[in-house]
Structure formats: structure tokens, C-alpha cells
Amino acid sequence: MFWKSLLPVLVVALGIRVAAGAWWQERLPDQQRFGFPDSESYWKLAERVAQGESYELNPDRRVFRTPGYPLLLAPLFILAGGEPPVFWARVLGAVLGTAAVAAVAALAWQLFDRRAAVLAAWAAALYPEAVAMSTFVLSEAPFVPLMILQLLLATLAWRHETRRGQAAWASAAGLAAGAATLMRPSWLLFTPLALSLAFLDANQRPRAVRVGAWMLLALAAAMAPWWIRNALVTGRFVPTTLQVGESLYDGWNPQATGASDMRFVDEFRRELRRQDAARGIPTTESGLCFEQRLDQRMRDAAWDWAAEHPAEACRLAGVKFLRIWNVWPNEPSLGHWRFGLLVLAGYVPLLVGGLYGAWCFAGRGWPYQLCFLPALYFTVLHMVFVGSIRYRQPPMLALLVLAAGVAGQWVGRVREKQQESANR
View (cartoon, rainbow, N blue to C red):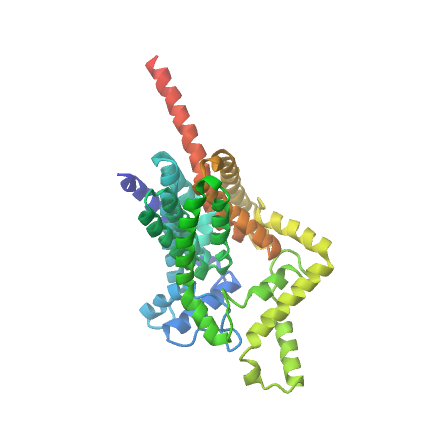
């Protein structure tokens, strides 16, 4: 019965997202396929996967992107028998966004009740920023439903009374964590962080050890093929990608503003090639380890700059924090007052409700704390790297569950008072 009541919400969610994708596609200039530079790399890698070619953007970009999203896009190329219309990818994003709505409803149902689940579903279906992230050809589209699924499965594992049930649900949660990490590599450290929080409760420590062991084993199993492939390609262990160095330098450098500006990468690449040529290292030979040396060089440069300018690094952290949680779009191209008011009206009530829900429900235990933890995790992470409204979207869906719990209790109290008044 619950899923029947949820079906209209999912239909509305899918319709809004497909319509938004069509609107965005029409809004772009004729010669521009995507609104974000990242989309081009996902598209090219998906095409190479579909054609059975090596997984690389070029010879010194072999471990640049985790393979999750390109693998998801690759069937579109196979179905099209070549390059598909970009709108197909937007429809896929709409389906994934609708799956995120269903996952949010299921998590709210587990943590609260049916009323909260329906409220959470409607809020997720209509939340403007969630609709937007389903529209763009970006890895957030598949990452968000997998992230919420991991939280749901971890909750089921935590609440199960038998060890066999705990092992099954925790293993499923670990596999979801691995799949989410293969979509967004920055997610890798979330699972051990979340388990560390569970371990702090001495009364629940045995349960935390059992659930955590199975979850981490499954996470490692999901990541193992990518780890093995990276070791074969680079000759070393690479847990996610060799993009960490440039992402870190993007956040810590003399020209850093808190926003992303990757123009420095080409300069680092040219300088490293010049030094290789000066040492007489052939291009083909240097290419065997060029990518990891380039990554290390940018990483070292970022750490050196931050160590020499700690006050500026702290100031930038504050700037990035404000960029992540800004009530108004950071980008001038999205700063039209109508769009800004839409962001403001959709975002602020959910944020306030989610934070209030975290304060109300954190004492109920680890599953409720899990809904707040992604917001803390992504905030700290992107106060180091770069800040953008884009990076708050996944944790906002988790906070939305807590906001729905608050709203559900409020609606319940109102109805009880109305019932009492009617009975007098």
C-alpha cells in the first residue's frame, strides 16, 4: 500500500526532471553540448568503453576518472550504434533522480513512519536543486541514489537482530558504498568515518565491529577491480584517481578564489615535459609514469603553498564554506533574480528543517546520525578543495530525511489536536 501511495510522487518527479532536461538542452548554445566541462570527459570515456577501447582520455590521462559513470553511459552509445543524443543522458539522469526520490522515501520510512516518507518523497521530488542535478550530465545523478541506498542498507544492518542478517545488510551497504565511490571518488573515506562514529558508542561497540567489518570487506571487494587495474597501469596502488593533486592545487594556490579554475594544469604539464626533455627522457618512456608524477607535483605544490600561507588557506576555507552553503547561486550566469529566489525558497526551509532534525534525532542513535554526517563530510572536504553549491546537493537529500521527520511529527500533532477538538 505504501508504494502505491508513492507512485504518483515518482511519476511527478520523473516528469519534472525530463522536462527540466529538455529545457536545459534548449537553453544551451547550438555548438555547446554540456553546461559543465566535466561532462565532456565522462562522455568521451563512455564512448571508449562502448567501442572496447582502452579506458583513458589520452596516454597521460589513464587514471583520471573512476569508471562508474562512464560505464553507466556506455550502453547509450551501444543502443545508438554510435554517438547518442545528449538528451538520452539527461533522460537517464531523470530516471536516476527519480530513483533517489524513492530511496529518500524508503530511508524516511525506516527511520520514522509512512507520513514522513511521503513528505520526504514530495520534498525530494520538487526540490529545485535536486531537479537540476538530475538534469546535468554529471556523476551526481547516479551517486545520490547510491549514497542514500548505502545509508538505508546500513540502517537495516544496524537494526537487524541476528548476526546473519547484519552481515547480509552490511555487505550490501558496503557494495553500495563501493559503487558510490566509483561514481564520486571523494566518497571513499565516508564509510570508515561513519563506522568510527558508531564505534564511539561503547554500548553498541560489538554491533559496530560486526557491521563495520562486513561493510568494509564489501567496500574493498567492490573497489578491488579498479585497484587492480590501476596497479597494472601505473605500477602502484591508486585508491581512486590521479586527479587528487590537481584538485588540491585548485583549492590551494596563489590565485585560488575558492572556485574552480583548472587553467594551471596545462602549465604544470608543459613544465614537467620540458624537464623530462632536458634530462633526455623520451616522451614514450616518461609517459609510463608521467601521470602520477604530474599528480604528485601538483599535490606537493599545494601543500607547500598552504604551509607557507596558513592564514590565507584558512581564509579560503571560510570562503569555500560560504560558497557551498550560499543561499544564492555563486555563478553570475545563474544569478538571475528569479532563479536565485527559486534556489532560496527551496533550499533554506529544507536546510533549517534538516539541521533542526539533526539536533532533535541525533540522540536516537547511529542511523539518524548517518543522515547528518554527509553534510559534515562534504563540507570539510570541500573547505580544502573548492567550494560550490554543486557539492551540497548529495548531503541535502540526506538532511531532507531529517526535515521530513520533523515535519511528520508536526503534522501528527496538528491532526491530534484537531481530532481532540472534534471529539469535544
